[in-house]
Length: 268
Length: 156
Image: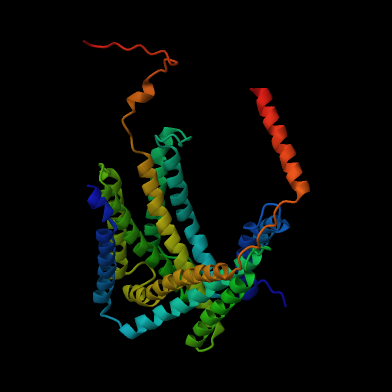
């Protein structure tokens, strides 16, 4: 019954548990559920790993997604660690790393991007070479390049608009936009190793449009959640009027105040 | 200069829209076009499915974080209804096929991770570049304190 190879148990259940773990983690520090969040998180990770090891790329779309993520984790980590190294080895006061590491950080970040470019001209592994795996991998690359071009252009033009000689930053981001744009053009014009241009076109029209709708749907759901919380808070009754202090309470407050005032007077 | 800075988002949003349309036009020209109805259909499916999944995720987070002061009835019941609505609509659009629903959900995750990776790369690089800016050292920082001992020389 509880077969980890079943996508509902091996993939979707851990995702639901991750959401629950996030909820537990948001509770008060003294709440016992706070400790439960770490256990739930690791349990879901273990189930996902077991699911990944017990299935093969062509078995289901979930396994294909894990294969794609596993395939992309090295270049993406390279980019993430590279940018962190470059940031924390800079001349700013928050840079505790040696200055000499800064070029290495940039090299790692650009290396990660080039790695993804290299994947497009090399034969993909079996798990993502055919069927749903190929579509998921194609959608990942397509979305990555499109967002890279758009966001790099946004950030670069923002640098120019803000002025104060941010030419170096703007030029770097412009290079990123051009490189991303060139890769996008190449795969759409000539295709990539293992996937023809027509396959990329189909992925663009089917998956890219689906994901644009998905992005709008997610944003709408978050706005609906905010609206729900707002409505709930608006409907909440006013807190009860606090009863005035009793004579006994007044005496306690008076004693505490007197004690503190006397202490302050003695200090001076 | 101040006036230019206030309206920075207008031209930038226009540039982004222009770029997005250019990319779509490029694919349109290379692929020989596509039916607009199929684009709208895919966008609607993406919208309803993402709406349902996000609402369900928020519902689980809300259940996990419930506490005595929260107005849980509105939040939990509301999110349950929203998630049910989104997922039911998606299921209806997929003609009741749970297999297809799962595979489209996976596609959403794939796209979202790609989006996060791209945004992370660009803003990570931007952060690294911005923090690397060299500034002329403020001469006031090099001054020593006199400990309040000040003498003034008045010119005639």
